[in-house]
Image (cartoon, rainbow, N blue to C red):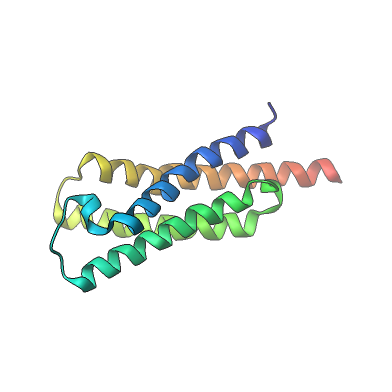
Length: 132
């Protein structure tokens, strides 16, 4: 398996996290967190943010077929995820120790996503080098 193919496979697997999590959040709302009876505004906001998460996952998925040529879009989506992760990290810093789901999300946002962005940049550089 080439490095490009391996990156494509791992990105597809990683996309399952925001696609499934975001989709579930849109469908279930705050009930997915065991929160019932929340204000309509809080429910709406949670479903909106879940929709953004779903969209980010789909956005990454659309880059897979020509992943070596998608450095700008990949970098933009990765930056959005990292910024969100920094917001989540701030929440942990002011609110206390994270639960397992939050720890997993932080790892995806602040470790896995930047690592994938660096890897994608490497694959993009290699693709340009090979074509010259």
